[in-house]
Length: 271
Ligand SMILES: C[S@@+](CC[C@H](N)C(=O)[O-])C[C@H]1O[C@@H](n2cnc3c(N)ncnc32)[C@H](O)[C@@H]1O
Image (tube, rainbow, N blue to C red; front, side, top):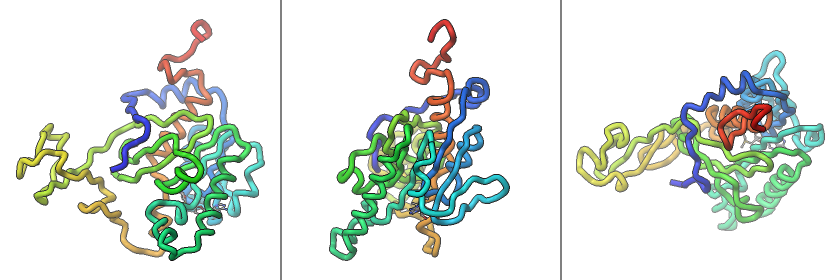
């Protein structure tokens, strides 16, 4: 299992909603690049931001007032955005896909073009940038990510190591840890933390001899999504728990008078 590069702490019962309601000072112009699902866009829009998504595809969550550009995001990068959150395609970048290229079965130019697109997004003239991608060659060819997060740190019963490259944004703080099931070498399954046990209740092997698995994984660690025409896009959708954390935490960090490092709201006297 991939571990986060930075310790991702859980902030417990931090009252984000109360703080957002009472302390938010300004709204941001947010562009969510390469997003057809609308999940991150809607999380920011729900907190009062002027949030737009952009994708070559139409948006999945459509309706009255929905802000979506259908087309190439490179035509929309110079429109005065405060924040850019980008989810560029990982097909030619991720470790899981790179073996086709390294074995000479795929044109390496596809990876070079994908890296150029990432460089273009990271180099956009926007003050706050987050670029998200699975573990892959961006780390070695451009730079290491600032943070690697997991959906199970954000209330989702799923495992998918997700790298974040951040510019002028704080690291995300985990919101809620979802316990995995333990798959023991003996073939039995149990939840160690609930029972507060140090070994498999069936055979006694230590917990470290078992594999941690979440709901999106089979016992052997494969993704459970059945083959379909939309499997790739379905797998690429941002988890709602991560989108909510981005919207909550980055709204607080950039738009409120709450000092996240100290935890206490700044007042006229203690600023
Ligand atoms: C990995 S998926 C990201 C999905 C996203 N996490 C979501 O929840 O919708 C990459 C997306 O980038 C889009 N895309 C690729 N090139 C693009 C471009 N030049 N401009 C805008 N969108 C692009 C694709 O259509 C695809 O939907």
